[in-house]
Length: 519
Image (cartoon, rainbow, N blue to C red; front, side, top):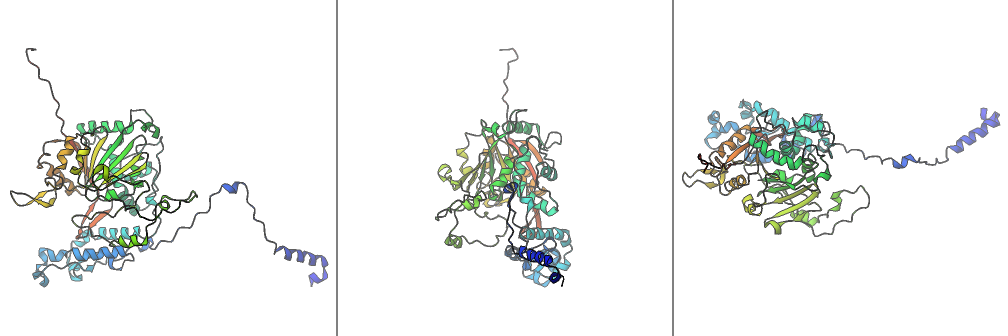
């Protein structure tokens, strides 16, 4: 009625109705041209933090289900194998394998619920098994693992502390570790490169004052640090490494450490901006790169968002079918060889140079990685005339010197030899290392493992009495904080690189004898 009586209101109403159908013109200011494109939303994880616990047989991930089956096939029931279990009827035949899953930790731990209730010792390690269970599910949950987002170059004005993991992560500008689970994940990933860096760095926590470093070790590390850091007062920049020799680190008996991505080992080089590194992974279980495919590489994208993974050639379907691998390989007495690593675009074969299956990756101008799948004594002759205590050192991560050899037996007693004495394992290797006068650093996965390896040094021929201590045996501040559970017995749990110690070949100074009469 109002519109009908007032013609002016009718005109305004028509204009307003027509304006509703006029499309708005999109405008863009000058400064919006430099804004980043909106990031893609993060994918929702499969499991959340309050839903990580699952019994192995009912896990949503096939690898964990396969591990539970491996434990069932390898581990005997602890009650059946104990003296207290001889009262049971089935003990007259043979101990049963584990089949019953503990409802508190999710691991198969006993042959039956009856034996699970009868085991009073299970409560001592049940909480650790549950922790490992949740950690394994968390790694596969699909959440964004910020603890694996590694930092770049260190600020030249900021010092790095090697007191412990917490202080190191803070001074090295790592993402905040808000959960204990994140600490365990990050420590397991970084324990190999940071253990090496914590020993060699000038701010190392292994010092004379806490009696972890010996006077002989102080001289050995001073020589290495002269190459790593340069003369006191000189800036530690990439330009300062132009006229420096490469620091060669020989990792002997390498297994899991050889399968780490190169960008993880790059964290070692970022601790020493003014040094050049060449890492040698040598051992019969070293991971080699996947063979090159015959298909043509995909064309490189011109966009700046292209990643190195897109630059590699895509494997053909036939190759995938040939390389089918089991979902899970049991971790038994002799760990299996890690799966082949991803082939980097600059990977090249080195078999013609070293005569053994090998590869070399010049990953960055500061880091070169070489892997050799062989025993060290097979290639020692190619390096023996080039060793220098100022640039070379050896690392052995849990070599197992004190364990009995699975292949060598004593001719006198008929008992297995220790691996440090075995001619097929470490027997011929350690005398060669001591003759170089370069430091040798060794880690162990538990206090008992460190003690066992140290004791074996006192009876090995060519080793006993032929070395000086560089680092006294003790705990490693940068060992992994994650428990590693043995598939053949879930009660056996260790931590990677728990302890560390070091030696070098004994130096014998020659003194001139003078005649008392001056003749």
